[in-house]
Image (cartoon, rainbow, N blue to C red; front, side):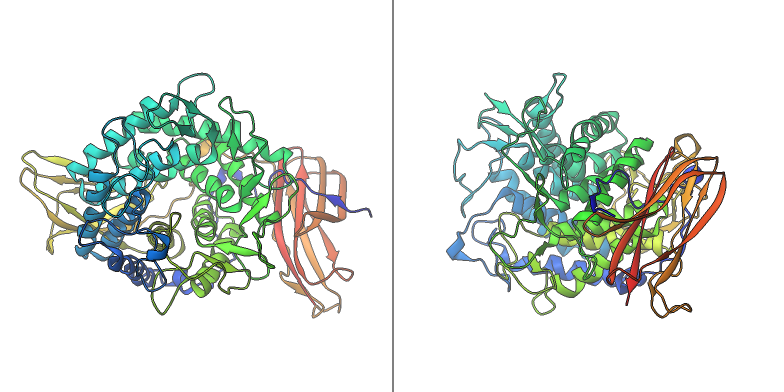
Length: 607
C-alpha cells in the first residue's frame, strides 16, 4: 500500500472508563525508580557540586563553571540572576530531602545576591546579567517574562522549605511586576514575552512567557497557599496552552509553534520547536489537572506527549531528542553529525511521564520515564566530579564540551529531576512512606502551615508522623497536610507522608470519554521465536457500542505501513493477529480510531 504520513491526533493512552487508575503490566528497570532513596544521594551530590563556584569576595555564584566546578574565567566571571535563583531552588530542595541545613545557607547566599544586585530599583523588574561585583552588564537591556518567571523559582522554593518572610516579600515584589507590567489584559491575554528596560514598550507572546509561569511558581504557590489569585492565573495560563499553543500542532510536521506576535498570531520567522518544551507542556497540564480537573487537560497532554514519542524520541537508546524545524520535521543538528539530547529535555520525559502515569495508569508513560531515566543516569551524570553534563550524543558520548554551568544551566533541572522523581516514585511506583524536612522559625502568633509536597488527587497523601528537632510533634492535620504551630514554636520539622490507595484519580464528573479500549498486544515484544515461526502478535480492542472502527500500524517516523482493521463492528471484544514478517526489527505503533476517539500503543518487533 502507498506510504502515508500520519498526523498524530491522540496517542498512547488507553481510554479508561471512569478514568480509573489501573496500574498494570510494566515493571520499571531503573534502580532509582525501584529504590527511590538512591535519589537522595544524587540530589545531595548535585547540590554540593556548586559550592565551589561561590564568590566569597563579592557574593553570589559564578555562572560559567567547568566540569570540576571551577569558574571558567575565559567565558567571563558573570553572575546571572537566573544562576542565583536556579541554585536557590536546588539548594532548598536538597535541604528538604536531606535535612542538612548547610543547603539552606547556600540558598540564602544565592538569593541575597539576587535581592541586592538583581533588581532594577529605578524601573522595576530583574536585570538579565550581572558582572562579578553585581553591577548590571546593561541597565537598558530589554527584559523578559522568562527572566521574571525564573527569578521567582528559587524564592518560592526557599519559601516552601522555610516560610521565610524575606523570601515572601521578594516573591510578592516580583509577582506584582509580572501582573502589572508583563500581563496583557486585553482579549489577547497572556504574559508579554519582551519588554523594554523601563516597560515603555512590550511585545510578543511565547511558550516561555506562558508555560514557565506554571513551572516556576504558579503551581507551587497554588499548592502551598490555596490563594485564589494563583489558581485563577494558573487557569488563564492553561487556557492559553489549550486554545493558543497546543492547537498549532495540527499544522506542523512536529511539535508546536513557540513564538507568537502580541495578538497570538504565529511568528513565522521562528520555526524551531523543542521536544523538551512539548513534554513540559504535557507535564504541566497533568499537574494543573489537580487544581482544575478538566478532561481537556488530559487529552491535550496525551496529544503533546504522543507527538514526541512518535516523532522526536529515541526508541532504540531511550530519551527524547532535542530540537526540530517544526515546519519541515527535520532535526536541527547544530553542526554535529549525529543527533543529540539535552539534560533538561530528558528530565521532562521523566517527570512528565511519571506525572501522567500517576494520573492515568497507562504503562506507556511509565515506560518512557523509565527508559529516559536509565539513559540520564548512565550518560548525563558525571560520576567522577558530580552533577550532570549539558548535552550528550544519541548513544551517550559527550558533545559541545564538558562544562557544567553557563547562562542556560545551573543547579535547577538536575535537582528537580532527582527531587520530583523521588516523590513520584515513592507515591506512585513504590507506594511507600517518605519524609521531607522543613525549617520554620518561631513566630509571635500561631500559624497553620501547608506542607503538601506535590499536587495529587485529594486524599492521595496523609501525614503519618512529624518530629520537631528530633522529638515527636503531634499537632498536625493528617488529611489536609498541615502543621499547626503555636506561638513561639519553631525549629526543624521532619514530616512523614504515606501514600493512600485510591480507586479513581480523576473523579466521576470529569471522566475521559468512554466507549472503547485498546489493549496491549501480546506477546510484546514479538519475534520469529513464536510457535508459528513467524513474528506474529495479537491485538485486541473493545467497543461499548457498535460503530465504525479502524486500526492502523505506523513506524517510528509516522509512516503508515498497514491498515488491518477497517469497517463497522458490533459492540464487544475484537482481536486479530498481526504478522510482521515483512518488517524490520524495531518499534511500531498501532492506533485504534473510533467515533468516540483515538488511542494508540507501542509494540516491539525483534528478529
